[in-house]
Length: 144
Image 1 (cartoon, helix red, strand yellow):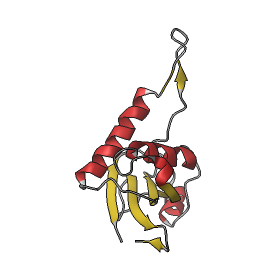
Image 2 (cartoon, one colour):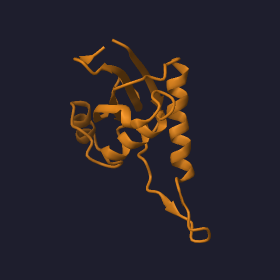
Image 3 (cartoon, one colour):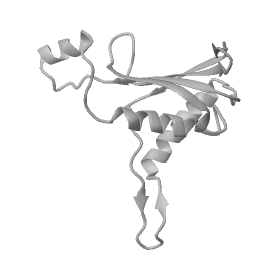
Image 4 (cartoon, one colour):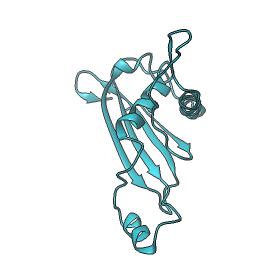
């Protein structure tokens, strides 16, 4: 099975909505989103991952820091496995990763046939950031 794992440290961001230029009438991606997509691509390239052909699966674990301002009881709940329901939306996390890997891990994100995305709180074993696995799949029977 062919797989590449990489980690993007820091605060997890979702894909921001496109912006519209009233002057030129064009649509563009905000600079903060472009920068984060570049950071994702660079983390993948640092692992010397190939540009996969054919079907691909992407598994994402978005790891969020526990806010220091929270009371002890709420921090304990997070450490015990309570899932973070807040922003960014999980679909926007998935979108920023898939777009960031476009042309790097695969030619086009239309090759992605299966995804898994989960939001969790950081603990002593996982720092805040994105943990991403990209798997090449075999169209005949699933995994390669």
